[in-house]
Length: 135
Image (cartoon, rainbow, N blue to C red; front, side):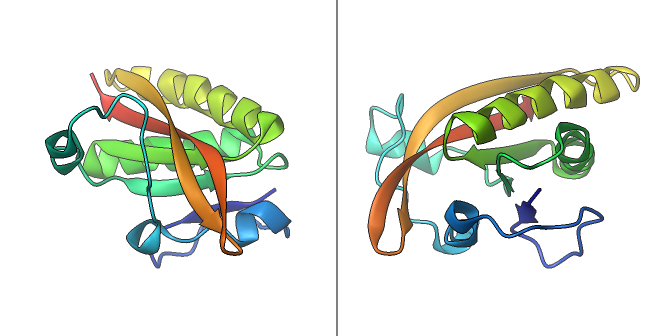
């Protein structure tokens, strides 16, 4: 299981090596060539910056959900990135679990999915980007 964040804080989640995720860059240096749904250049400038959580196939959904809930409580928005069906499955389950965690506190969230291109070993890969925000 691997969970990385773009902050310098230590994650309470243990990490294992995932070749795809190990080569994903942090949000500050992540080249985003396109985002589906961002039709105009000014639309990208209006997006809020959110902490990026990278999910792998071996990520525990409950641990990722806790990280999502913490980021939502702190900043109001989180971004989850995954590459591949297994990682995307874990990410979607984590969003559903995080929603139940936050609903106990009266916080409702929405998830906005998109495709993004990321550079891994100087090669473009398509990832799923889930932007999670307070409703």
